[in-house]
Length: 408
Image (cartoon, rainbow, N blue to C red; front, side):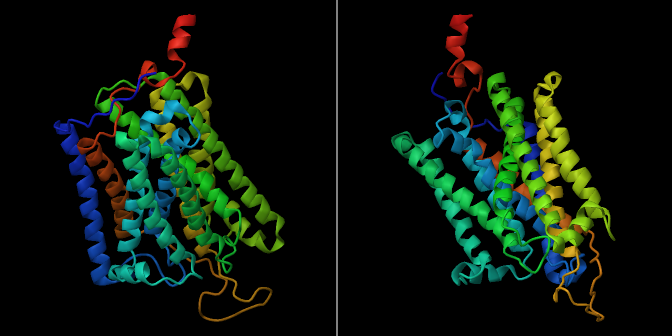
């Protein structure tokens, strides 16, 4: 196994500039949507007094959760000493910061008063999980940036393991805080569960790795750099493990709710489609089938061991992750809020009614703009920084490659 040699992209082809233009168009469309909502007011969206977190939050939370998971490869190489992943550790750290930047950009632009984010950054209410998350987000940027610097600067390579350990702990804490946003909301029956924090951690592993796989395969395919089967097999198996673990936590979460009599209503609403079956379809088709079962088949089917199947499985995991966030965030708000448990309440303010919601075009544009921001940052960074290894061929990354050849 040779020491990896990092080279920036040449980035002079028409395809490269076309990709930047496409991503730039999505970003411009998102900014136009933000200006439109800011000028007209949020009444132009489909959000209301009951559904206060809409489609932009689906994209934002997905990107924030995926940012933690994108650091998987770097953590495995530094903290757990798996040498085969070390060449891709800098790209892993870069992608993690880019995804978090994209997610936070959506949140800031969807606030209604984005200038007030300065207040949230300077005045903290430590009884609020949102205040804690402000600290976690800023800390993530700082720690991962130092970690990336230690990996790229040869003089400080010896400190990269220590920096990687701190980044590993911080990323787990960040995802715990994101999951706790919902776990601490005791008023919503779909939330208020301690298992949401570890479930978000496991989901982040799958979402982040899926995005990372697409970036790696695309970057090495378009630049015609070597990407050996050993690395692809490692990424494939790792993705399969994380998909299975995420499905396990989803099953445990719903079985736990079914055990609690008080939550039979919300479980019937999500799993059986009582009153509004859109969430049932998104759950069973989007989250379970598209985001879980089919990717597992693509990952482990013996006759489908190729790059195309890995990319397709990764794309499906991303779609399943967005479905999961839609069901969790919007479905959890759509179910009627029970203010007085065990009591019959009557009024003219939507008591006991399934809250209606459907995504509007400005919301979708803003969400896609956050995704485009993340990818734009990665595409631009790998041109100006030496992030990508020149080769990921088996002879360059697999520590057992020479021994196996000699034995053969």
